Image: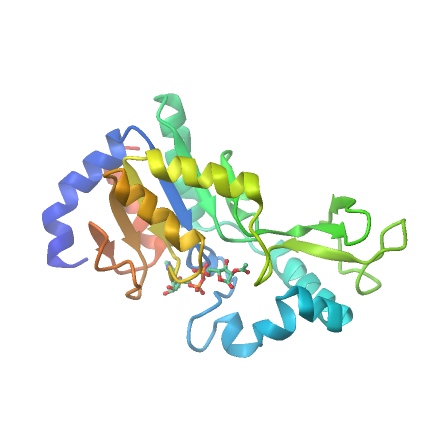
Length: 253
Ligand code: OAD
């Protein structure tokens, strides 16, 4: 941790321990220590190895539904083998402490792996959907899939329609209710934590502006600098799985 961080540390710990309401906005970096690749890290990120235009747009699914379905089903199966890490567990613990003290805590995640739920977090807003709920593009029927890889790609609905993964693709709107809830919580919180996200994908990256407008303090944790780093009150360089448990322990939460 840098000098600035040490100077402000007491205020930060105090805020974690007492803030009236806390929002954590998470990105792929939070799950990196569980073995799930991020999107934009230079060598290991998914978008360094795959072309999102061929895999993560409605047009891609229209053009090659089999390829898209296989890719997401493989990711679903890979994620099923992963466990929550110390960062996920620390956030679940913080939520529980806040709940006991009647302080609202909202976890907004851009991740589609459901590892926060697996770690015990209750109040999770999935901004970008998830890998497990596949829905029919014709009749809209959807169901969770936690079994082995599908036999056919894409899997078919009973109505005969093709089913697609329940993730938000580029060019699609975010689920309206989830976004509204995320915006309301961000606009009301006293502490906004931006964790393991590159802060470049909108509208998620704009949530912090609502927090700033409300006078909230902003904490970022990321091994790399992001567009938010200079604006954040505290920008801690490092891994969430290492920094978060320590911060939350020391805050006594
Ligand atoms: P990115 O891949 O853009 O950014 C991940 C961030 O995590 C980077 O800034 C890394 O430096 C940081 N990081 C890596 N390891 C970390 C660790 N152990 N602890 C903390 N931080 C770490 O992922 P997102 O910001 O989540 O959208 O990307 C946002 C959206 O873009 C994703 O939800 C996805 C993608 O396209 C959809 O799929 C709709």
